[in-house]
Image 1 (cartoon, rainbow, N blue to C red):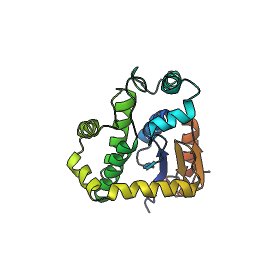
Image 2: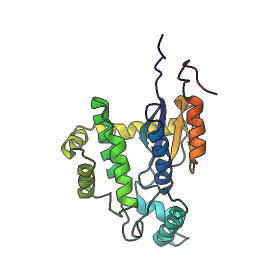
Image 3: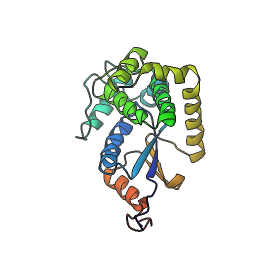
Image 4: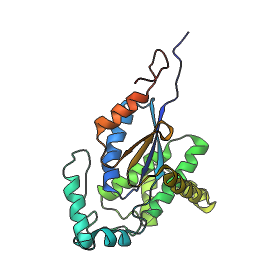
Length: 226
């Protein structure tokens, strides 16, 4: 009898595209998935942090330098991680008004993936984060999102159809309800083992890998490794 084919480990990744910690952890997760592409599947989920950027920065950084203070914090933080690149103008000259337009576009790609299984959402999500952090492009602008989709080889007309029909909006509502039910409080948060494991914030590659491998079936027996 041949080796039993097991389902991949699924990771629900809740995050905001403008969250610097999510940008850092995404790079770590992408590296691990690249090493184990057939054994791990990342399911993107949205967790709103910068839906209203101005209000967010004012409430958390109003007495700590405001937008300039937050920008310096992000740049100081990113400087400690060789796995990510941050443009000098990100959060300084380029301050997106909201992450919602980007979240909607990625949600539209997720709808397309449900119909086709292509994996466009992960590709577009990575491209959008890189466009902001590494190239300081304003991802709250529809013109930029349209251009980024093209660069990721995704037809914007296909994305627009999901927006026009309301499917992308329904996805975001579903994400918000799911985050509330799971008790998620920060970006990023990784949910594993059907909600039984939660990893939040600055999660190291070693911790992510250990948790993933603990859930992976053995190739010769179909039993989870613990």
